[in-house]
Picture 1 (cartoon, each protein chain N blue to C red):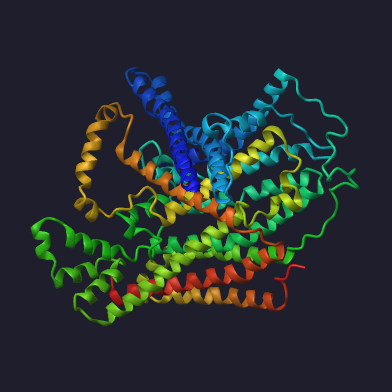
Picture 2: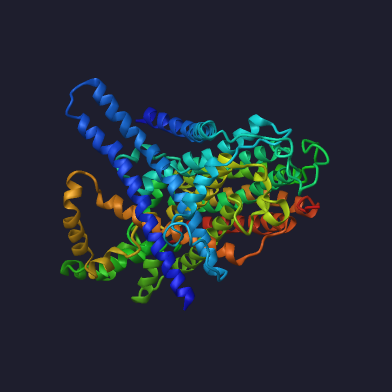
Length: 484
Length: 130
C-alpha cells in the first residue's frame, strides 16, 4: 500500500518536472527560433535578415543547452526516488515541497564548493577531462533532435544522412575524458578506474554497434529521421517487433478495419496478394493470407522468417541496452566508479563545478542512449495506437478537438501539434527506459572485472554476430521468396 | 544546404566543447572571486588514499592488461566500419548482379574469417583476464 502511494508521488513529481522542462525548452525555442525572426521580418534590411537566420540556426543548440541541465537535475531526483521505492525507503523528501528541489539545491551546493586540484596532478588534463566527457552528450544528441521533434522545420537542419554513424562516433569520445581524468588526478584509485573504463568501453562497443547496424540493415538507411519515418503508424510498425516485419499485417488490418465500403469490397484474395507483394512488410500479411486459406511455399517461408526476425530484433534490443549500460558506466557495469572498492574511481579527486559537469554528463548520457533506443526500436515520437484502431476509437475527432483548443497558440506559431505530440511520446518512452535502468540498478549487483570481460567477449560478441547473420539471411529469404 | 549543414555540425561540436569549458571557467572563477573560497592547504590537496599519506606518485608505469583485447577490438571495429556500407548497399549490389544472395554470402565469408580469428584468440587464451 505504501509503495502504491510512493509510486503515485513519483508520478506527480515526474509530471511537474516535465512541465518545467517542457515549458523552459519550448519558450526558449519559441522566442529565439520564431518570435525574434517574426519581429525582424518587418524590417527590410540585410542585417535583420542575417540576425533572423542566425537565431534560427542557433535554436537547436539553445534547445539542447536549456534541456540538458534541467533534465539532468530531474533525472537524478527521479533515480533517487525510484531507487528509494525499490529499496523500500523514503528517498529525498525535505528540500522544497516533498523533495522536489533536492537536486536544484545540490547543484547550487556544487557550484559554491571549493575547486581543488590535487598535488602532483596534471592541471591542464585535469581541467580538460570533464569537458571532453561532457561535450559528446551535447553534440551526440544532435541527429536525434530532428527525429524527436517530428522533423520540425527549425530542427531539420541538424538532420544528417549518416546520423547513426555520427552518434556512434560521438559515443566513443567520453571514455577519453574518463581516462584523462583518471590519469591526471595523480590518484591510484582514479587511475585504475580510468583503465577499467577503457577496457569496458572497448569490449561492449562491438555488440552495441552491431545491434544498431542490424536495425540499419533492416531499415536500409543510417538516417535517424528516415528510420523513424519508416516506423510511423502504431506499435505494429516499430522496429522492436521484427524490424518492420509486421508492417504488412498493419496495412492488412487497416484495410480490414477501414470504415469506407469500397475498401471493404477490395478485401478479397486478390487484394491480399497485393498486400503480399507490397514490400518487405509481407511476411506477416502472408501469415494472414494463410489463415485466409491461401497456402503456398512463400507463406510458410515468410512465417518462419517473421519468427526469426522478431526473435533476432528482440535480442538485438537486449544487446543494445546491455552495451549501452556498459558504455555509460551504469550499474551493473559501473566498475570505473565502484564506490565500495575504488571510492568512485575516476572522479575521486574532482570537486565543485568539475564534479558537477561529470555528474551532469553521466545522466545526460543515460538520456541520450535511452532516446537512441526509442528512436531506433520504439518508433521515436510515434503514437503506439495504430491508425485503424485510432480511427475506430475516435482519434481524428480528438485530434481536431485538441487543435480547436490550441488554435490561438497555433496561430502565433507557438504550438505545432505534430511536434508537441512527438515530443510528449518521446519523453514518455525515454523515461520508460530510464525507469527500467533505475530498476536494473536497484536489482543487480556489480560485475567483477574478469566476469565483465568474459561476458562481453565470450557471450555478447558471438551472440551479436549470430543475430546479425540470422537477420541478414531471414531478410534475404523474405525478399527472394515473396518477391518485391 | 550541404555547406550549411556542415557548418551546423561544426558549430555543434565546437559548442559541445566550448560551453562546458566556458561555464566551468566563468562560474567557478566568478563564484570564487565573489566568495573568495579558494584556500588550498598542503593536506587538502593531497591525493586521496583512504586517509594515509600517499606512498608514491600515481604517474607510474603500469601494466595495461587488456592489450590483446584492444588489438581484437581494433579488428572488430574495422569490421563494423566495413559492414555499415555493406548493409546499405547490399540490395543494390544484388539487383545489379541479378543474384540476390550475393550480399549475404559475401558478408558471411567476411564474418567467418573474423570468427575464426576470434575462436583462435579464445583458444590461445587471449580472452582471459589475469
